[in-house]
Image (cartoon, rainbow, N blue to C red; front, top):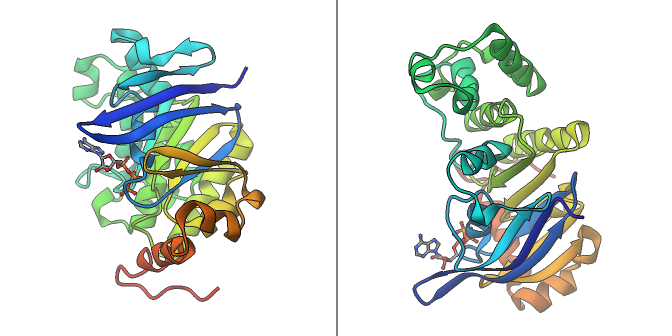
Length: 268
Ligand SMILES: Nc1ncnc2c1ncn2[C@@H]1O[C@H](COP(=O)(O)OP(=O)(O)OP(=O)(O)O)[C@@H](O)[C@H]1O
């Protein structure tokens, strides 16, 4: 049985079908890229999986458990199992890096101990190990707000790792980064996928990145899954079929637009 089974999943916002009857099976340990233009439904799909939102129709199950039906403690446990990386990192700028990573452990604590930021030595060791995997130990005591975007995203990945997740979801994790930092973040996700055999589902605007890192690509358009297969099968011709003549240019434009935040694109 696949680790993640998505069946007839839909989410409507008024008349907008953000996700429209998606059916997907994702095996444990896969590195899956979800691509599509802005508004295609990629974020909504991830938010349905981690239960930030509830579906209009359909189900999502993980290892045979229907997570769309979870409530209370079981739902909180699922949110811990299902780590989420966001485009804007969501770190606490004024706190140092190691404390931001330890926030990934807060769900394991009582309200009192988490408010007081009391963490065990074992948890501190876990946070240090996660930072080490992301080459961020030298920054452990620096305030998160002083780091570059790429460094902040690596801290966010470390924070996700200390949750001991069973699946990692990343919603456009490199959309705000220059190409060099984008590569480091994607490499970090790849290493985690390979070493921990952790299933990674990552939303991407850029086709080239998806082809380079993701063994499997899911292409969405207007809420629907238009392609689901190995990266090498998503040829330029298939992209044109799905997205029309402008499809490739759109995705290439997305590559350029991610690289303009004050930095020149790095030559290939
Ligand atoms: N909370 C909401 N209320 C109303 N409409 C929404 C809401 N969330 C998403 N939508 C709509 O659902 C559609 C899919 O949005 P979604 O954010 O999932 O797309 P996306 O592919 O992730 O786009 P982007 O790359 O811009 O993040 C869009 O038309 C969007 O406007």
